[in-house]
Each structure stands twice: as C-alpha cells, then as structure tokens.
Length: 255
Image (cartoon, rainbow, N blue to C red; front, side):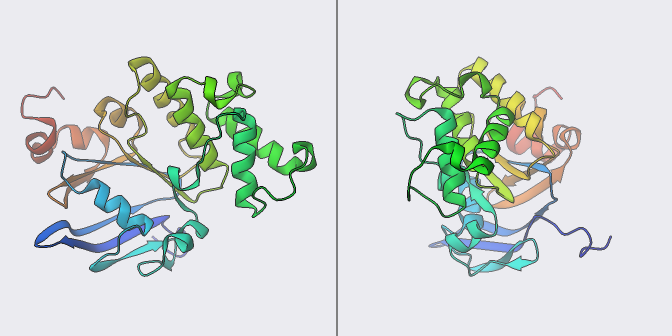
C-alpha cells in the first residue's frame, strides 16, 4: 500500500511511559485509518488513560513516537496537537447552561475560527458557522432539542452535546474517553446509535467499558493489558481471542 497516497490518521510507535518503576505503557504501537472507529479496551489499571494522555500531550512519552498524519508530534504541546486536529472532547467543550444546544455548538465553531466571544452579533451574521452547527446537531441526533437550553437536557443529551461541540471544531481525530459512563440503559442505547451514525464521517478513538457498545460500534479493537497491546482485530476476532477472554472478557464469557 502506498502510505503517502493513503496516510494514516494517527500512528504510534513503541510508546513507553514510566511512573517511578512502573511501566504504564509498554512499547505501544498502533494506527488508525481515516474514518475508522477504533476502540481501546482493557481492565482497570491497564494503562488506557495513560495512553490517551500521551496521545493528547497531557503526558510526555519516555520512549516512542506519535504521528498525526505525517506530522511527528511526539514533542509537541497540547495546543499544537489540537491545531493538527487531535481533540479529546473535553478539550474543546465548555457547555453554557443558559445557552441552547444550537448556541453552544455555534460558540464551539466560532472558537475554531478564532472568533471566541469577540464582537457577539446575531448568529445569522455567521452563516457558515450557523450551517455547520445545524449539520453537527443533526449528526448528533439533537435536532429535537436544538433550541432547548443546556440546563434542561437529560444527562445523556448533555454528553451528546459535548460531542457535538467537539465535532464543530472539525477534529481530524476525536478521542472519546468513556462517553457512556453514568448513562442509563436507554441513554446508552441512544449514544450507540448516535456514534454509529458518525462512523465513516469522522475518525474516532473510543475508550469504553461497555462491551456491548464497543462490539456494536468498533471497526477494530485493540486490547490493552498491563500497558501492552495484546491483541488487535475485528469484533469477532477479539470476541474469540483466547488471551483476551482470559485477561478481560473472562473464560466463561459467551462469544
């Protein structure tokens, strides 16, 4: 395959991070293709949060390299990585309870263009921003509550709003860390449907404990155990992988 003609969205090579004598990530190498929804799973303490923090620049790697597209960002700060399109949802989201869903998403899009709060004027004065906001709101299944203020949203809808605001910033790769945490079964099901509708439109790295959600959504899954990736594959390959079943799913888990 010609890598230049079909560049990867994100790639790591040999990432290592120590905390004292503990190797929290151990030679982690993986890649994500443009438009892919990749899931990272693993038991508590596996190093998932450390890996995400290395990708975003909140932690620095002791060894290894990180690439966004063809750009080596290993030594780059958070802001440089955000500028290249690598976003963790909370890095861009600051939900304003008194504003509607539509207004919140418009503000996120304004910040992407460097407008921030400068010279507030009617949103119709920024037609490109307004159009983008409406498109993202529909993508995130929030059309029915577009003009509802954020303080009146259900918990699951608020989490969807956070994702919508991140998408309004045009991420090249969106990192979602436990997006369904704290949701009811119904809210979780709605979030799965929303994320399924985003597949192919955006490149997404999903860290999630809800295995039903992971199996419903992922194109590929990487399994992290004690800081190392022990397996990567399709849903069916991971379901049936003996080491994964022992380490994470459990020997008696039905495939």
